[in-house]
Image (tube, rainbow, N blue to C red; front, side):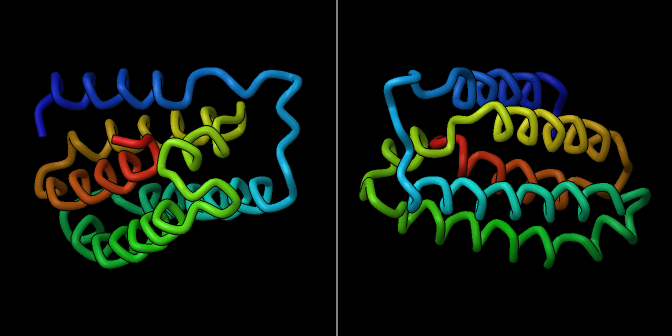
Length: 134
C-alpha cells in the first residue's frame, strides 16, 4: 500500500469521524452501548497492531485483525436503534472514536513501512474503513 493511498485513507477517515452530534442530540442507551462495543474493538485492533514488528508478527496478526473486522462488520450491519449504516456512523461519532481512529491510523502507517506487512496493513485498513462508512 503506497503512502498516497494511506494519506487518502487517513483524510477520509478523519472526515468520517470529524464532529460530534449536536448538544441537542441525546444518545440513547442502545447507541451508547454500540459506541462502547466499537471502542472495545478499536482497542483490540490497536493492541494487535502494536505487536507487529516484522513480517512474521504481521502474518501472525492477520487472523486476529480479520476477527476484529468481522465483529466491526457485524456491529455495522446491526446498528442498533437506527437501522441504517448512516445512522450507525452518526451513533459512533464521538471525540473518543475520533481519537481511537487516529491512533489506529498511526499504527497502520507504522506497519505499512515494515517489509512483508502488506496483508496486515490492508486488513487493518479495511477494518477501519468498515466503521468509517466507506
